[in-house]
Length: 64
Image (cartoon, rainbow, N blue to C red; front, side, top):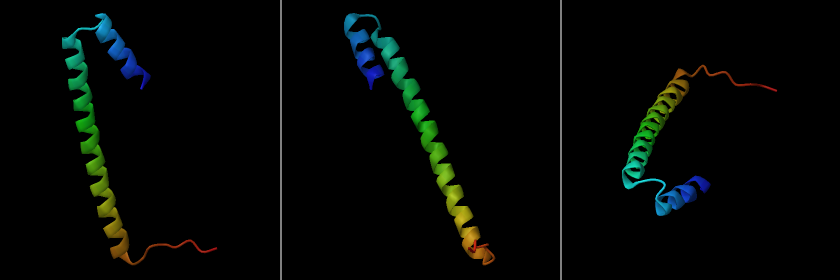
């Protein structure tokens, strides 16, 4: 959170302009969207693998 406070201070002090701030927001949104898409794809793949594992009936079980 320190980076956010620094960004706020820079904006107030005029060390960063509004256009740069908007650019940072856009980049952050793009990164978030890409991360969300990767997460969704990973969750779908996990669900597929779990179905395969349950459907195979030959899953190994570690025995003590």
